Amino acid sequence: MDLGVRDRNYLIVGGTAGMGLATATVLAAEGARVALVGRDAIRAQRAAHVVAAGGGAVLAVVGDVNGEGEAERIVDEAVAALGPLAGVAVTTGTNVAVHTEPGRSTDEVWAEAFDDILMGTVRPVRAAIPHLVASGGGTVVTTAAHSIRGFPPARLPYVTFKSGVAAFTKVIARAYGAEGVRANCVCPGAIETGSLAGLRAQLAHQRGVSPEGLLEKVMVEEWHMDVALGRLGLPEEVGELFAFLLSPRAGYLTGAVINIDGGTEF
Image (cartoon, rainbow, N blue to C red; front, side, top):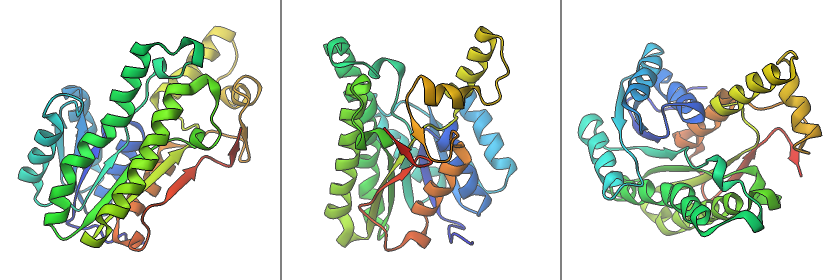
């Protein structure tokens, strides 16, 4: 399917790895121009080379959207280099510390979760909206988590602010729909990005077993995740969904909160 994104410009926050990189790769292969945002300059350049190899113009933008004024600078830099934005995706917003139980969720953890998960989405979207409106409309795609429907106690700050991301996205859809802006939220399940791929290798080494099928077994027996497809998802599978939502092909889809979790049930 032709996504209709050729010669359109997209900003991918968190585009230097995982689901963001997969999204950028799909868009670029379809002829879009893509700006990849990441905190590490070397990683950003490497990601840009990977995406460029598949076609399309790619810009690496180095910065942290949680720094004062950084989200605005990042968006302005992308617009100056590529032209008017057709869409922005935010694929960041997680770390180990925020997956904590109620009794272990200190003020420091809550503050970190708020800044990284919720404001890490609010800031770049807020900075991009005026550009999208000025261009006659555009798309916003954010990242929550399948766990916002299950509310696991062991991930209290994470689930709280990922729920906030979903609510924020739905409000953006309502507030700016008349100005041609669509906004949707993706809720991934267990996706084998770099951290989970590393965990698979680490557990295999620690336990002296083959990595094949190990994380799937852990997912069921230790994480207590009931996944209908019986496996982890791939970043590429999520990237395809993000690219579709960013594209004109999803022209009447807005305000949606979409699970891509292989049929996960808590």
